[in-house]
Amino acid sequence: MATKKKVVKKKAAKKVKKVSKKDSTRNGVPSRKGTKVPSSSGKDLTIHFMPYSEIANEDTIGRIKKIMGLVLDQKIIILQGKLHPDEEARLIENSMTLIGNIKDFQGIEIAAISGESEHVGLFNKVRHNIAKILVGEQDAITIIGPATVVKDITRDPKKIELMLQRR
Amino acid sequence: MIKIIRNFARRVFAGVFKKKGEVKLGFYGSPNAGKTSLANRICQDWLGEDLGSVSKMPHETREIQVKEKVVLERNGKKIEFKLIDTPGVATKIDFEDFMKFGMKKKAAQERAKEATQGIIESIKWLDDMDAVVVMIDSTMSPYSQVNITIIGNLVARKIPVLVVANKIDLKKSDIKKVQGAFPEYEVVGISAKSGENIEEFYEELFKLVKKV
Image 1: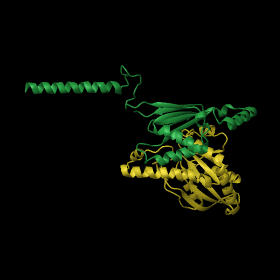
Image 2 (image 1 turned 135 degrees about the vertical axis):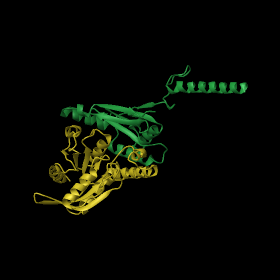
Image 3 (image 1 turned 90 degrees about the vertical axis):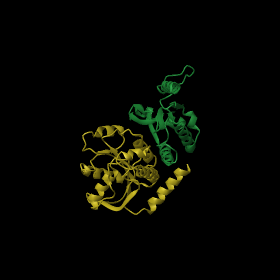
Image 4 (image 1 turned 180 degrees about the horizontal axis):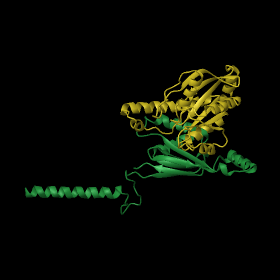
């Protein structure tokens, strides 16, 4: 009986040790070796900065493919510039097609902010429009993320607030 | 480029063979903005019947609904409309949101699937409109990307737009915010539910048709 009790006690101690190990990583405490801070679910939150040059030479399909690839990889994209309204519509269409076909995919969150309102005066507007035609709308920022990661993006004229899902 | 030429050809072709006076008027916006409520209000005012059902649960309209031969009259001028009520456009759909309204899991999943199809249909129909009423819930932030994407697509297609700030009967309504978000457009505040300011809406609608 005594030996049995000892065994049970040892097992219980092992369990406690295991739990405490898990807790230390769950709380986001970095291990001695690691430099990454894992989130509560064990997955890292990745923000991908995409300079406009990365999509400048792509056609609509190429751009959507690139963006959706990152979104499906659970990444939040900060895109320098803005998509064309038609591309945004296609992106929405594309994500709707994937809901129900890809496990746990619920769609996307997207918001864009640009300095358009700052181009006051005819000369500035003309200059801005010429630049837009030549190099695309680069004085804008677009945030795109999977709805399972990004809970909401609220946009005021000059600021964007990103709210993440609790993990 | 091919798409632009195709759209242009389609518009020219449609313009030549279009039934005189018939204006295809689309209702676009986010879910629960009040698109069907306004379409119903117009149909009730001029036909005495509803176009579709309305619900507090989002994505109640999941298929395009059309009402033909809706004739509106103002200052002796008659215009025949084809009203096209579209499903609300959203960027995400979670079936669990429907379960909060008491739906069972399977039914909620089915509704979510239908809602995604509805959004795809709404986007596809953008090309077929002569004029569009963009409904915005004036109790919410107007800076939603869905509103911006819809209006951006209509502008790119040169389709005249009327922005309607709905739910002005509610305390939280803020028309000025809607006007501030879309300064380049005519914004008319209404309550599709109570009928408040509906005459001003009809006035603006007739002005919109002139641009078609």
